[in-house]
Amino acid sequence: MKQMKMLQQVQKVQAQMAKVQEQLANEQVEASAGGGAVKAVVNGQKHLISITIDPEAASEVDMLQDLVVAAVNEAMDSADAMASERMQQVTAGLGLPPGLI
Image: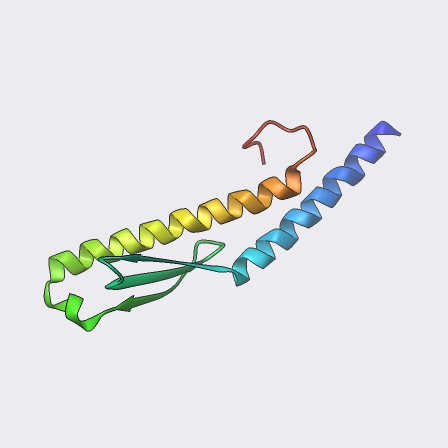
């Protein structure tokens, strides 16, 4: 009986996690570098959606490359944080160690 209840709870959590993953695909975070010269948009599944570059920033290629990397990395970090927060909401109250799921 206990095993059946636990199995049902696990299935419920799996369904909720799948729903969160689906929602994350539709949510976006934006990060910028160089005072807004480069903007990167990433969805909650860490897929790069777009890069916007101020034409004035394109004149110095080395700096532009660094700004693109910085903006994308910041956006990816924000997407990770958003996904982690959503998953913690799903698993809260299960008594599992942090980071297990």
